[in-house]
Structures are given as structure tokens and as C-alpha cells.
Length: 382
Image (cartoon, rainbow, N blue to C red):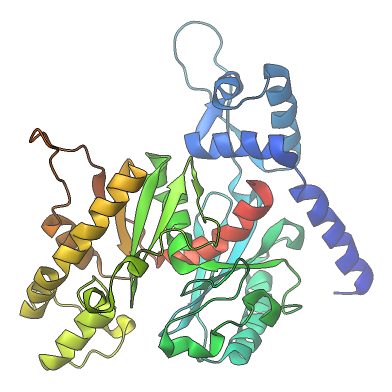
């Protein structure tokens, strides 16, 4: 790509994504409803009818919205429905996990268009950058993605932050990333903006777009991975908190309690003691057998700490739902949710109202999907 061509598409991209706060409100209202008539948008936003109509026309012209067939309801001529245009924008996601590094591409509605595993050591930041740099360029060409519609590259990193920014304290298996600014490592690696977020928050974002978020604007997300983390969605958007560590739920446990939380590393250690050659989360997912007796022992061991967490989330946040997600096999998450008994009673013996406990139905690893959605969220919905 020549310098003049590069500058031109960058200008086109800037123009495409500059929709303003009011445009973002209209776009998000449509995303949350799936499809909507223009007349309904006035109730879904704080904007006037005139503003809504003007903004909808602008978003249609930009190719971020499309018209769908009218929904017939009552008398009068039905109006066409407004919906997100899948090819209106694209996001690229890079998930750096303890076992591997994955790369994904999604469109504006959260459809997974591409998923691959990089041949890179996740504990080698420079190696990951080199592999991702080459792979992203190849995928963009392979899929024929228009560069001006690529919102950017989102990076999923495990661990918490010491301060706001994109430096994290990850698990020991990927300690080479510790306190290193992730965005700086990938600076100039891609022709698109780069941003990074905690993997559990991104799992919650994926759930927000294609899972429980279709029913609830407020929910909590449990990320059951090598460790045990969480994410929060409030009013249809992820909530980060002051230090960007909201829902860093394992921090409430003492050192002794941490060994009884529902983290997969504890299950893997128990399986190895029982004679199963399982050394990683990837191996657990590949070889998982619901009949293993160790699974029942693990669930019995971790349920008290899980219930403690569920009660805390319920008492503090009062979410509509708590979603069991992360990399744990679907059967394992289902059995954990069935074993959970978080509800308590008040002084009168009346049951305290609690959230629905849901099992995430996202088929791919949610954090890599959330990473791909991160730049779309950041540039069009904020």
C-alpha cells in the first residue's frame, strides 16, 4: 500500500467512524433491539424525533445500518425496520491466554468470520507481535475486508491492572507480559488502532452482543478459565470501574480460600493426581469426560466459594442474570450452576430475590470474540 493510498483510506476510516455521541446512542439502541422502526427510536433514546430521523439517515448513508422488511402491527402502512448492517464495520481480536494465542475477525453484529491459532509462544510478547502482524495482514487480504471499515485490533489479556491503562499483571504462565504496556508492544504493528482489555471483561462483552445481552441490559459474567474472573454489564455496556478492575472477583478470597474457588487450574491439578494426563485448559477441553469422578469432587470442593461469590454479586449489583462463561467445558459450567445455591433469606424467613443463573451459549472462546468487538464498541458505541 503506497503512502498516498494509506493516507486516503485512513481519512475514509476516520470519516466513517466519526458518528458522534448522538449517532452512537441511535446505533446502540438499534443493536440492543435487533431491529426497530424509526418511530420507536425516540422512546429508546433521549433524542428528539427530528434528530433521530436525521441521524438514522446519516447512519444508513455510511453503511452502518440497513433497511429490513416492515413488521406489520395494527392499522396503517408499516415502516421499514432499521438494523445494523453486518458489513458496516469489522473488528479484529487477539486473545493472549496461558496456553495459546488466538486471532478472530467479527462483523458489526458479532458474527465470527474467522478464527485461527497463532504459532506463537503466549509468553513471548515480541514473538506474538511478529506472528500477529503477519497473520492480520494475511487475513484482511484473504477475507477481502475494506480497510476503511476495520475499526481496529482488540487484545485480550489475562490479569488485573495496577493502574488505568493497558498494562496488566497476568498469571505466572505468561509472566513476560507483566506490567508491560500491551498497546505499546503492538504499536505500528497494524494499520489500525490497537486497544487492550482484561479477558473476563471481553467475555462479558461477547455475551452482551450475542448471548444474554439480548435479554438483559444488566448482568454479571463469570469467566471460568485457568483462574476465576468476571465482568459486569450495566445499561448495555461493560463497566470497568475506577482502576478498570471491576469484577476482579478472585480478589475477595483469602490465600486459603483461593484454593477452593472454581478455577480450572485446581481441577487440572486434581485430575493429574487422579492419573489423567491433563496439563492445560486446552487439553481439558479436548479430552473432557463428564464421567470422571474427579469432576464431582471438584464441584463439591468449589461450590461454597462459588456461592459466596454469587451472594456478593447479588447483594452489591442486583443483576438480572449471572452468566457462567469462560473456557470451561459447557457441561462443567452447567453442573456448577446446578450445584450453586446462592439465595438466602431475610430476617422474616422470606427468600431474597436473586438473578437468573444462565449458561453461556457462545460456541467459540468468548474472550477472543470480545476482543474483536472491542474496537467496534470503542469507535462506534461510545
